[in-house]
Length: 143
Image 1: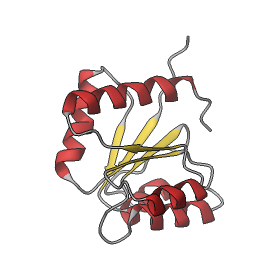
Image 2: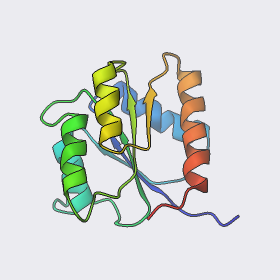
Image 3: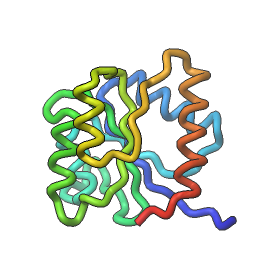
Image 4: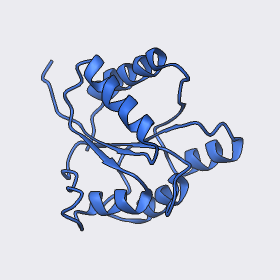
């Protein structure tokens, strides 16, 4: 099977969660580039290439890992904006959050997320979730 890079944009405001994702990538030997935005506005700028700092996410084979609860622009607001943008609306998004609220889950799926995953409590379980996601997106045909 040919190895194809997936450009992963993590949209997360909690530094501990960012470090956990980075550690999970390292633990599972995931070599895909990981870009980090700490809110929805910064993420949109990175996807649109409208800011050089932080760096833009390459236009092809992108996947967004999205938290719901963030300052400035939360995850659901980000999804609404993303889905209205013709050049970004097909970007696959997986919600990775602590929000177990039915209304958040329903709204996220209404906005066409590829999945809604609750963040596990332990790091070992979290690393397993990231490994499973990596296996899944390695098989997917991402635009």
